[in-house]
Image (tube, rainbow, N blue to C red):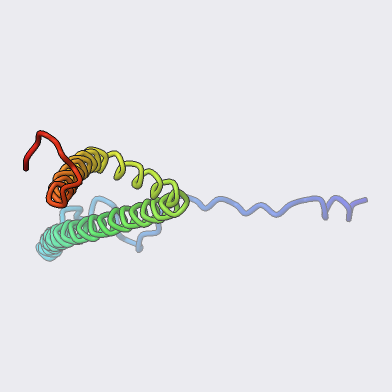
Length: 167
């Protein structure tokens, strides 16, 4: 059973102590806690380096911002051009679809359209036709009257017709 207890135990390391190890003969009061000239110069140099790095980082960020702004402007111009191309392509497709529809409709209604056009032409020509018909009728009457007069004159010359009329 004793061996079983050993296997159940876990290893726990001990906590380190807080005792400072100083060389013999040295006391805390003997140590100067004020920074030396070299430490101050080193600290100043570190601060100057940090300020310079911050300035460089600020300049780089400004350059990146300017570059990003120009890139965004270029991308916006490209996007506008793409939108314009898409709009023109859509308009062209719509026009082609409309033209195709119109051609199909005109082809289907061609015979009906031709019949309507013939009817309209007859209506338009009706007044001209009536005038021509009246003119032809008048010319026909004039021809008949002239023929009758010529025939009467010929008959009178032969002496077949006797009457009061003398031509």
